[in-house]
Image (cartoon, one colour):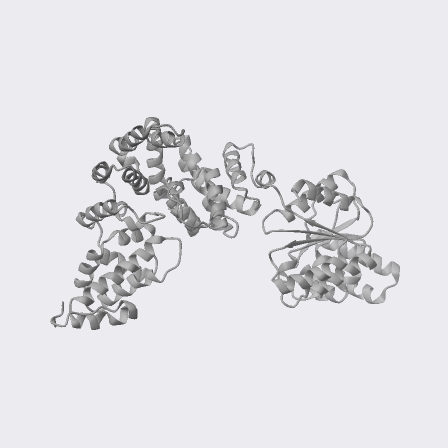
Length: 577
């Protein structure tokens, strides 16, 4: 049920003075503990206490039932006190109260325990005396037991529920159980639920709506929080912790973007919400691969077969308004996966977006072809072709490779091959000043094979560019430090196979072995940086090429190459290649 309805049931439970057990279950991060604490606080403000004392305990890491009993005793506080957090003062008050209770009831064993506790000069050793009689001291109180699915290996769930049952039946207690329904394996879950049904008086499933989750996680009076809330609602995110983590990452770069065009912040929030969800809650969010491969033309070049899951993902991304991964999105994703942003890269890409956002006419010009295409079924093919051509001729430097690939393919569909080939040249020339990585087709997230002529033009441009860094120094530094950054992998991925061949030919001995080892190491890495696999593939290709040049080289590269990629050296050549 929604947060509102769940809290309504919590209030009902708290208003009832009879002993009982309430369970509240839900997915990780939806705010079960937060919701319970809010309901408890509202009850305290109203002054209506179902019991005089209260204890909150988490069973995370507790290894036996005695430890749970001791934790409840140590955490017990009076509900009418200023705070419901246990302290030294609340513990001493509890001990004094227990002493009076023991003396009044002539309970000799219990009296000895609490007398020993009260005599201790500090509370640190109290648990040694509490353990034997803690259960006797727990009665007539409100108790919340959290994290049931995270109990230690020695604490059986059946024992917990048996203890809870005795608290209700014999100790006049009211008990709330909070549990993450995803935290049990199938066998443990079945056994637990069998016992749970016998113990619990009411079971509430905590399922906040996206609006409730955003309202809990964010300060909607803050304009930036309100903007983020709008995005998380569209996506349907209900995990409060995920939303808070996304907001936390936004705070890392908020100051750097505050003075830029508003579109920059809007794009940042939109990218952070979607990509943060995909990183922090991958089981529910659209897969990162699907997000990366998407572009503005995906809807017009659909796969022959689409699974229901893919169709649902595409529908969500359409509704969200996500068309393609921008360079800025790449920087955001790298920061999310690394745990912190490369602020220099953020500022660089934000400046690019700021400049582009200031060109309203540019944006309109780039949107014009799709307004024609999606605006109706009129006979306006010539207008559509003209708008496509103008978008590249006038704004080629503002377009990405994926966008141009889609435009070129549309033109070829309309028998405009000459125009398409001409625009490829215009596009390459318009971006002549960009880094090597821009011209490496493998570094662009295309959902299908690119236009052949476009790929060839980019490859030719890349091969004609001189290396602006020393790859040997970069690889040596990686070998020495064991770490690298996005700028390192982007450059190494932008090198051609010929560049790798020349690099290997220039090295000897241990230096050669180290470079080959590091290059091949990237091929075995699994992560969110596609440049790594590109580096590994190009190193393998370079070794294959060198192996084909002589029989001796074929022997040299054999230890590095998998069997299926072993080269066949020419039989009439026996040089060192």
